[in-house]
Image 1 (cartoon, rainbow, N blue to C red):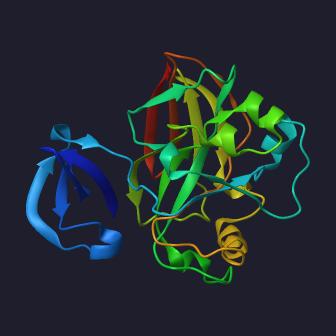
Image 2: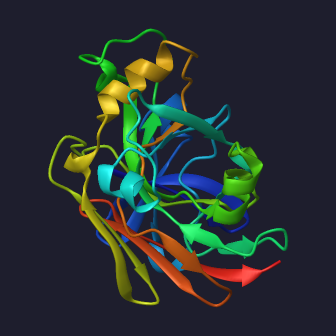
Length: 255
């Protein structure tokens, strides 16, 4: 089932994508279930929004693909390397990525994203995927120069618009399968890597994170990026595609 969050007639709503239309839901399905209103709205009449705005946190995993760690000259971590992005960094499909004047190099990082569906604390890896509501696509936009000079990543990863998400949440996706993350810059493939190449699986990451802090419904887990990250500038179009989840497309502009 594919769930979209959208704007229509000055209201923000949720719907199930069905053959070019949205079957409108009564409320946020993570909390209100899948009861429908009886309305159907054509996709061409709505504006897609970020499928979720985390109420609490965005948990990210650094260097979770060996080839990506190597391309930046970093060692592979012995345990998941976690950091946060603020929820104010979230934008939706089609929204602009705003390049801050503080940075001279901003990079794209296409990633698989899991949306937590219920409270998770000290969960086991064996049961971790039971706590996932669904999956979407993310771009862990990074001010690479600031990441290096700051010594920690909060500012470099946390600017407004630095977490594009979308286009929707897919509940029937297999994060242990052979889906591929592909990132294109102005139509040219820059990243292409199967999610099976992750060093730490999504289940392992959820278990590891939940041992430290409680994961709440709507929290996001960004699972890391394959090799091929690189800079983009104002006017560039960045597309992240994951087989089975669609395409997330955003254009960059200067602040």
